[in-house]
Every structure is written in structure tokens, then in C-alpha cells.
Amino acid sequence: MNLTPVFNQYLRRTAIPKLEVRSLGDNSISYRWIVDEPDFAMPVRIGTKDHWQVIHPTTKLQTMKTDINIQILEAATDLYFIDVDKGAAVTPP
Image 1: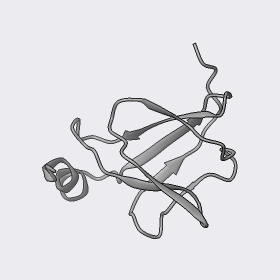
Image 2 (image 1 turned 90 degrees about the horizontal axis):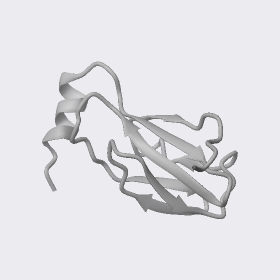
Image 3 (image 1 turned 180 degrees about the vertical axis):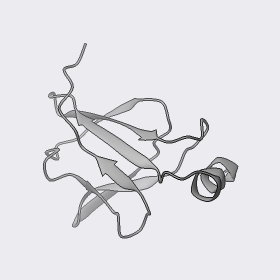
């Protein structure tokens, strides 16, 4: 795994990585990293405190099925120095 973009983001940029997560309304979510480094990719745990799952977001939008409500979905921010943005739901195309 090439960690250069991860180190560049944390050491050479001012903003910390932001995980953007949106509900698609059909038991799916979309997610991606909002960062300055174009090749940034860092796995992160999301879910609930009793049921984590590891996702592998990049700067490109990805989707996945989940039965966890976006309102209670969280990232394991005690393990990562990141921001999380769970903004308004997105209507699927």
C-alpha cells in the first residue's frame, strides 16, 4: 500500500481528511474522502460501536448497501484523526 498520499495529507496540508457519507434512501450510502491529495486512500471503520466494518474510501464516490440508519452511523474517530460529514440525503439518479 502506497502511504505517500496519506503522509502528504497529514504532514503537508492544513486540512485533516473529511469522510463524506450520504444516505441514498434505498438502504445504501455513498462515501468518499474530501482531501487535498488526489490519490488519498485510507481505510476507516464505520458502523456502530458494537458492529464496525472497514471500508476503503478514496476521493472517488463509492456506494454500499447497509441496514444501519445514517443517523446512528458513525466512524471510529477515536482511532483516526478525521472529520465526518453526514450531510443531507442524496436522491439516487
